[in-house]
Length: 161
Image 1: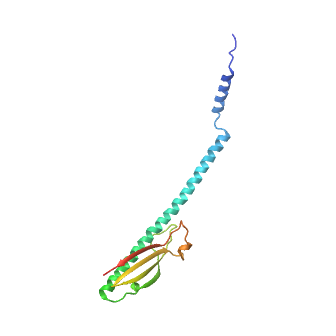
Image 2 (image 1 turned 120 degrees about the vertical axis):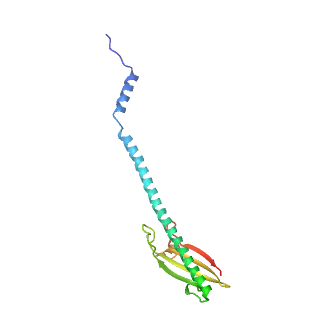
Image 3 (image 1 turned 45 degrees about the vertical axis):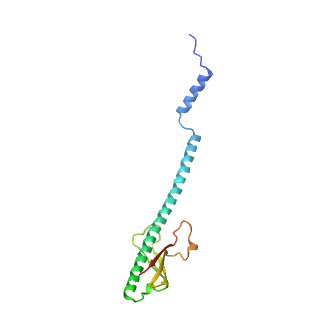
């Protein structure tokens, strides 16, 4: 009986199967680990942006609520002034405040206290324009604010009898 002779292609195919059966090479593992590391870094950056935007949204929500509350408070003072004919200090023409307000339940990275100022303009015939501004305490001016941080919220109301 003569021995079976294998062709060169069959030998290479057997060697390839044996190499694949051994598992992943070090190079393949390093490439896979690099891809995973890049993906995790990207997810970390995404999480940081999401947290920052969440804080910004929280500030805006609280700031708008405080501005609306101050407008309502000043409208009630204005209505009392119109009814009694006596000028209320908060409704005299000019700039008033800042009044520091610390709402409850604003934890996290959002500012915990807010500076509220308002300006009253006398338009004649008992009409007044009131502009309320709310900003986080500690910010002296809009120039000190960075684009990703909370900005001053401004709300205007026109009061007529």
